[in-house]
Image (cartoon, helix red, strand yellow):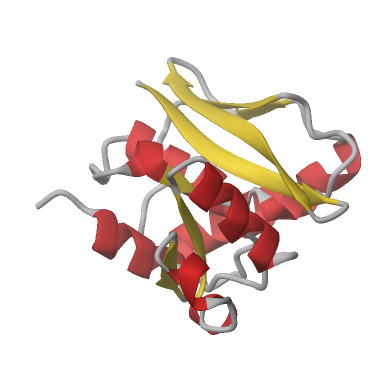
Length: 168
């Protein structure tokens, strides 16, 4: 199954959309296309550990993550959340509603808690402009102007995001 996750990077106070495509195919290993080599080690370790600590399984298939456009000039750890969601959805461990309207960006710690995102206001403004929803830590969303809060989903962990968006 192939899953498309919308993410974003913030540079100079402006958000730029990044698509993270996740596909599971026969084979083994994790393949990442479009991210610089330095970021990959930390990114993979944290993402996989967070999934396991939240009691999700790592699929026994080849995982391919493709970043479009390439994010070679950005830190990879801001893509742990979209990668984790992509793996869970592509492996059939969760079906999520409105995933195509959510902008997922951010770090995860080893326990699946969402870390601070850079410039939450720029991300929320971009979400409002595109009629989407920016996913961010609750404390950061609450610091936004009132007109931007309607375009945010306030969560504190990967597990909480899955529970909020899960199709029952």
